[in-house]
Length: 166
Image 1: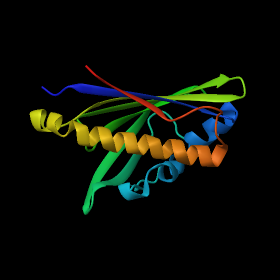
Image 2 (image 1 turned 120 degrees about the horizontal axis):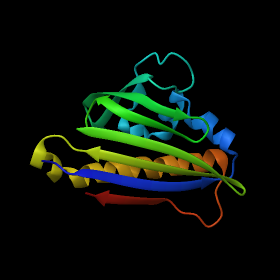
Image 3 (image 1 turned 90 degrees about the vertical axis):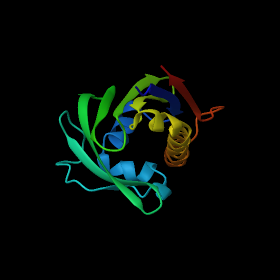
Image 4 (image 1 turned 120 degrees about the vertical axis):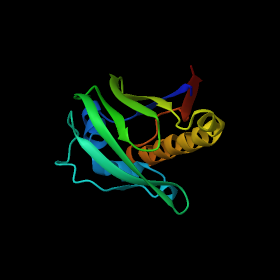
């Protein structure tokens, strides 16, 4: 049986929680915060410009050159402006559960992402774990850089991504 992995990243931004919610709750902005090399594109007509519970979003993602993959996630929980959760319904993972949390703090907002994921293919998936970990780390580092460019840097902060394994 494959293991469940998780990652946690925290980023502070010098914007209001409402501004953070406005940006991150729009599915179209996923393209802006995903590395261009991932070949990420939204395929679905997501029925509105804001996330809502039950919303299905379809993507194409290309983690390897010339190998586009279909991915569908469902927005399962939304509590504006505090958090939302997306879960994979079809795609490259055996499990994908991604929590996006927003907490007001003096001078801005603290964003925390918690991702639980499990790789497919049993032992072969486990063997590919370091590749997937590096890809996820690159995705969240890219998102950190893009959001810092868009909204400004938080003093004395660097990109922090912690991985865990159960």
